[in-house]
Length: 199
Ligand code: GLN
Image (cartoon, rainbow, N blue to C red; front, side, top):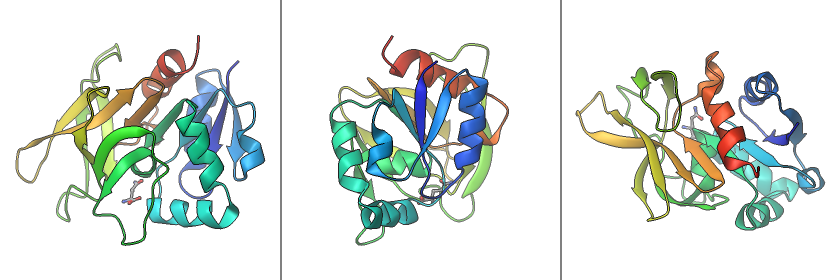
């Protein structure tokens, strides 16, 4: 059984734990640097990226976590977690930082006020069994992606009909704008375990 950490500074930690356990993983809450040791992967939950950033800095977790991601720790970030994995952040708070790792520019709260929460059925490349019901809650989107980043899913923005990338993978790193942990659909977590963790 893989040992998967769930970053537990703030956000929907328990929902990710349930999803990972349902997929056969053992989970560990990560609040301090020592808890990164021996992990096969890490999930960064949805929540509030500014709060998670602040707490990571005051607890001293930020720099070891950055280093672990840079060294290749597999990770999956949903929503706020996507923001935290992004190399570049657009519309962040003035002093907001990310952990980085994923070669993308992510726009925070991108969908705007009228549509800041909505749901859509999305085909996700590599996820079999039909569309994923995607829940967006004040979600970011991927505005630019580097050459090694594969776009797995895009959504039509309700407000203006444009198309935006909302699920991406770069090697061992996976990120979604939406929250599969808020549904009973475990396929994104299963995808992470199957494709991003070392065989
Ligand atoms: N808007 C939040 C942020 O900036 C993300 C929302 C979410 O994770 N549901 O972190």
